[in-house]
Length: 297
Length: 293
Image (cartoon, rainbow over all chains, first blue to last red; front, side, top):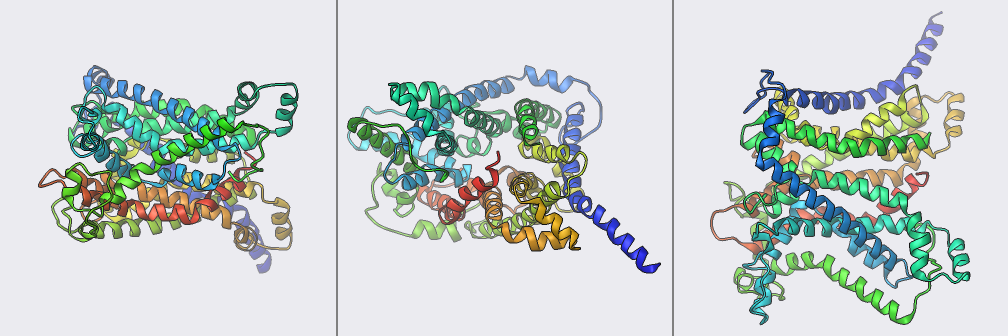
């Protein structure tokens, strides 16, 4: 009897053990991710300022948020930044991948150099570019000391152009990674089909335009999803490179949220802006993840 | 990327190849530029930089900026250099990487070999958690760390990085274990092996490649994190990235660019080393884990 009960316990444990092992992680995710999302959404409807407070104010934070010029600037910057960042990274990544796919001598070495920026912190990247682009000591100064006295390059200090320096540093950091994604895609393409098309007299240009690039659709999609998600989360790079300035010229939603929540004591508005960021990312990620998980079944 | 051969059916002429090499070389220079700027300027006296010589090799070679960045530069209010913050980062990264990788391996094992109803939905929930903008959890997390008495501590940061890292580690191990023959697991089960025995004896010995991916990924992300460090760390638990930013942004005194560059390299060194030493295993492991999409 006793051994029977023991065996019974053992087999029941074996049934429950997998779920038991998974449960701490699941509990953490449920509390720290989904519970916190609900809490933040709730806070965005309250009169929280320095600390969370629970006075319900309805949509007031959202209507205030959309009237703030600071938020409008952040969104405009986000638009400019995202379009240029995603566009340039994709074009550059694809171009370099195609070039690197031509039986290049030293390919491994070149690849390593193109990819290493990914390993760096955005704070390091930001610091390096900040001083390199600084008109006082960087490029402008160097060019002038080399004799090109009329050379001017003050984008990082110029309200109208500072956002492009953020694009430059961000592209520098991630374009090599995008290149690697496209290169993996190119290496997966069937050569027989290309050879057949070549027999029919197709030029290289047409091979790429008609056969190769259309087959890279999955790589384009992954690149778009990863880059857009990185773009919306961009925070440290701006902090290190420009600090959001000059003025508010390089503020992005992430820096807006941080300063409203932690330095301006407008937690309700900060939470509302975070909710909008989440919605944007969810609109991109959920369909993608859904499709990915579907396929795997 | 080492997948398949380098064979391509595309044929190119001599001039085209020259142009291709030229473009590739130009971009090598572009990607090397910031590293070059950081390196040469970290070993020259300040006046060589301010005098317009940023691109020149040092006339006077000095390791002074490195020594200063490491042990005596002003960070915030204390002239401690980056050294204590470097150790903060280490003592945050090591446990966070270890814990999140172990949890990810176990989760991946359960989600592929002990499947149950709705497991894909649960995995989807964990996966989406990787991609949320962390701004959405900053306020409640600050509150929670305070309630748990972990505010401003290294352990608080470890917790944060474990929580927001297990999605990725679970993803890696799940994809890797998905192609591992389930028959082996079933056979061991029939022989009476238990849950942990199967994991320990059968799956773990062949998990090397994906463990490397998980460790490199987590190490890089956690070491490079700035947002959580800036939001949750106290003055004595700040990680390297936050300290570097404080060093560079400090508005008092002369801007010592050479010290900033040395500090930036110090902050980049661990992840750069990992990339140089183990980068190829990362790509290889990633490929072996995701061959099935």
